[in-house]
Amino acid sequence: MINFWKYQGAGNDFVMIDDRDNKFDINDYKKVAFLCDRRFGIGGDGLILIRLKEGYDFDMVYFNADGHLGSMCGNGGRCAVRFAHTLGLFETKTKFWAADGEHEAELDESNTVHLKMNPPGEIEINPDHYFMDTGSPHYVRFEDSLENFDTVEEGKAIRHNERFNEEGTNVNFAEVTGDQALTVYTFERGVEDETLACGTGVTACAIAANIEKGMPSPIAVKVKGGQLAVGFEKDSDKKYNNIILSGPATPVFEGKIDA
Ligand SMILES: N[C@@H](CCC[C@H](N)C(=O)O)C(=O)O
Image (tube, rainbow, N blue to C red):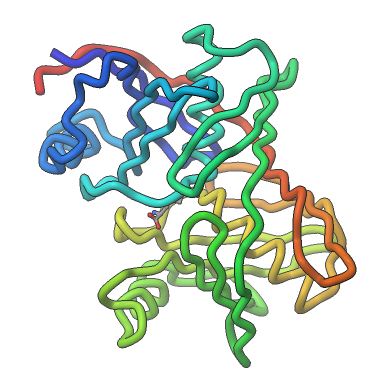
């Protein structure tokens, strides 16, 4: 029997498990996929184990809905912070470990989680798209309008093109909606479908909007499941740092499941 909690951050939803005793078999991808299954299991875009790690408040172990260990998840990170807070692992500020290394975060009075993201490495600037790693790989393409846009069809075609087919990529489509505002739709690898929000994805889109459109920080990002914000600084070498992803992280329900 597994005790679980379900959280969502702007509609990107996760099964959360307190695994401080390291009992969960991280290689059991069939079990993770079952727990994330929306018909036969609990349902989620991913699953997160909260484990202990020396020198940190906790370790976030993230799996995609397909059951395989994933890279960094921004919305999952924000949900992990809120969950770790309910477990009593920190008070308002935390330092935790994730797939892409160390992260700091803060939970404010309105339960908004402000999560520091690691700077992207090399940013590929192509004629019609950007590609960068904001903890997870992200393809970003600007669209004049996202009205009636088919994220699944367009996203799937890019995710499975010759370049990305093997490793996969997350694919984001962004529309500029104001001086400091974007709307972003995302097709997620590992879920292999559109999700209602993607934290590492909106982070990549905010950086791309700064490069392509000179859009200043902070940038408000509307996603299908709500509202996120990305703040950043750019140094004299045009490197991005102090990148903060902010948004809600909400407990939905908790329960037990035979697995
Ligand atoms: N939803 C996530 C991104 C999750 C990572 C991704 N599916 C992958 O493994 O590439 C987010 O909020 O960042």
